[in-house]
Amino acid sequence: MKRTVKDLVNLKGKVVLLRVDFNVPIDKNGKILDLNRVNAAIPTIKYLIEQGAKIVIMSHMGRPQGYEIRLSLWPISLILMQKLNTKVYFSNKAVGVEVKERLHSMNNGEVLLLENVRFYEGEVNCDMKFARDLASIGDVFVNDAFGCSHRKHATTYGIARLMPNAIGLLMEKEVNVLTQAMENPKRPFVAVIGGAKVPYKIKILRRFIDQADTILIGGAMAYTFLVATGTAVGESITYLDSVDVAREVLNYAAQKGKKVLLPIDHVAVRKGSTKKFVTDNLIEDMVGMDIGPKTVKLFSEEIAKAGQIVWNGPLGKYEDEEFREGTNKIAKAISVSKAYSVVGGGDSVSAVKASKNASGVNFLSTGGGATLKFIEDGSLPCLEVIQEKIR
Image (cartoon, rainbow, N blue to C red):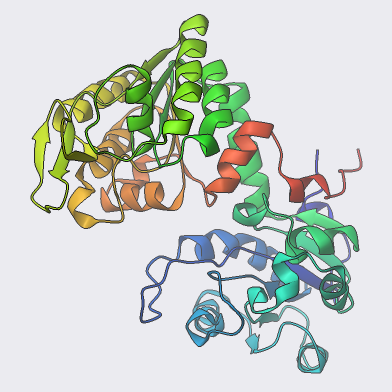
């Protein structure tokens, strides 16, 4: 069992380097669209404030190529000022003299937010010099960035190898919820898997086949599975080099006696057109864009019978507002079901919120790829380097 922030003692006056995930969605004008990840980190920050630590917060936003003002974390500092009953400072650098000077002037229980760590090449490359520069200002490292912990970056992996460390309250909750859901699920266990690329989800599908009772597959990846069953998909997105793999997955499920349901109708367009229509059969130049009403009904009936649901990935081309209806209706079905529900992935979480029934979901994971990786392997690279709890 990994050491948590509550296992750390005598934090008063200590500098705690806290890695969080403030990679919030923003529009082209830099407006923040959702604060779920910021809100999820607040309990750990407040705990450290109560302990009298000096908190230095590190995060990334987006995938910048060098400095990009639109991806600065400065607006996040203004939000933290509203949410925390303490002084919050912002440094437009992540390392260097400015950070040390700002830290030197801070009192116990105050917060310093560093600039976007991905403005530095050393972050994604896990440059140990960059990690050492950061570690040099702190006494202990706390990782509360569950959504980033599947990647070995300097502020999630490198720095943890250099300092006494622990996980935060959010990371602890994510780990406990996902472990319980996969190792001791409530029955019937229904997994809902969407998204696009089949190869990236083969391991997760096999894991769900091992653990779940029913697997519902939608999104672009469903068309590859339909091809594997001999069903025509018109001009829909398929990964022909993954058809054999999809067939193997379906055969594996059959051997295990597990139910796998694929779309039985579709919201589609004709290639070169934007006019949508519903069809049971995708032929000629038709392109599937979303699950149709019959599929929504089929999937919803399985969801209504579930004791537990784990959902990851949109069931249509969710980035296009015209093709969100299927995903949103499944989100609503999950939200109003009596099952214990866990939802992970940005689009899936957004759909649940759009359904206006988010309170009906038991746990909204802050991870997308991290959630899948943890379900696949039962751990994450950046969790592995955290010290074990002393019994």
